[in-house]
Image (cartoon, rainbow, N blue to C red):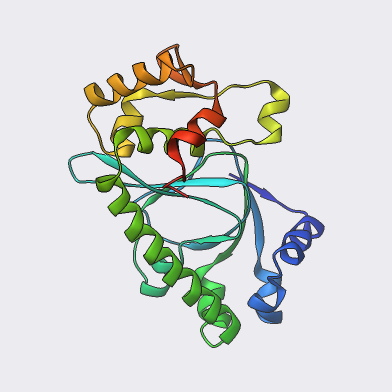
Length: 232
């Protein structure tokens, strides 16, 4: 994580997402702009919650981990969205792990300033209420999708979500490889079952097995198979 000490860039994101009125004059001076690298953890399940983050550019992955170490993908999010809203409102530790899929920019504000100036600021409270209500519905649907949709749809949707078209990575010529074991855990299936589906995808030219991971080759084919990305 890197704090970007550029108030003009911060102001640009505030204007782009029409957030000035949401924060108000008392909170605006206490906002910070943070940049997270690809695959960097933004917050981890069980950690103390200190910041409320507003996702203003990039893409994030949100997943949960059970007590026995199994992980399950919940959703992917792009701007504009919020991380840490439920934790702030309920004053609890981080519920789920959040990871950057691309280079991510977040506007963050420490809880101390929210507690001092935000609790009586109606626009911010209304904004958080809408975000939390939308998040509850979406996460509820995501858990149902993992049960109702076949592994082929889940895998195609997951691959589309993690192969994010970030111009920075395209310019560097990097191509994303994905761990098969991690993918099996995240989409809620066995490694053996996923391996059979991967072989089918390889035969169709959708993906390629490379260096122990998965390389996306045909995103249009994956979109046709997924029909609608169930994780977004």
